[in-house]
Length: 313
Image 1 (cartoon, rainbow, N blue to C red):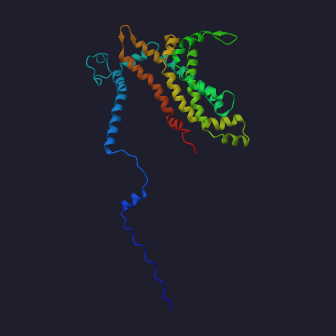
Image 2 (image 1 turned 30 degrees about the horizontal axis):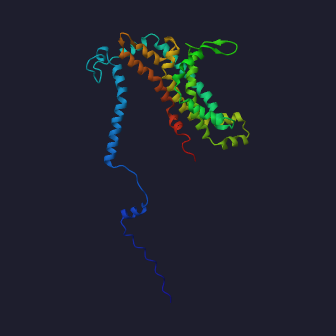
Image 3 (image 1 turned 90 degrees about the horizontal axis):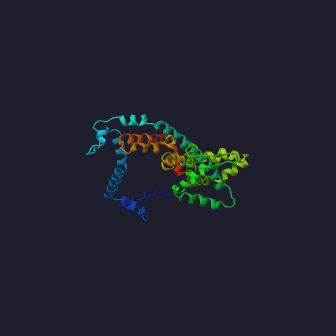
């Protein structure tokens, strides 16, 4: 009679300590980190740097709410003793303030919209089509960004004086249209260069699949390329808006005070009798509000636009 087989005894539990087993599992892996003292030092340096960067902004706010006697005091205070809104009221009641604000909005919106339309079509042609001189155009777009635009100010002024369209000659100096076109040209190289990268990141297979499904070239543009380039258009518009809204020298040179923007208007607070620091700082705060509002409206798409195309699957 055969005795029944005994069940196998369970394997003895490993006596290797847990830390030792983890050490073996992590062999060959190098962990890059920072010691506690290094982290504290880095955070301290970051806080100090942030304070230095934010202090001018704080001082603008501080001065804007100070009355005139505190602004001109021999010992400056780090906060207003008697806060007031008189500087903001003075800025709003100043001559040409509201008109220059409206001028700035019109010029900026026209320049940004025009640069996005022209730049998007140019970037699409460079990214999607093969033609003679394509690489040369890309190089020219990059080199144009390296040229100081102020060096072209005098030739630009002479060109705007005599804009010949064949049937009539126009003088676009001292006009909102002339400055808007100038800003459009100023923003255009960056727009083309940036949007080209976004469009190049869209696989051509999507275009081909849509054409096979029966879409026309225009339908491929409206239904595939344009929606996928939306985040790139948003990110590019932020730069264009800031560039056009904050520009000062060109519009101050080409236009009279009644056809300038708020940046040029701020100069009116400096006279031969002195500088009105309170209204100047209040005007600077009001000038920055449209940029902040524009940023808040499109902030959800900015991160997507800045990182789109960074990683390919």
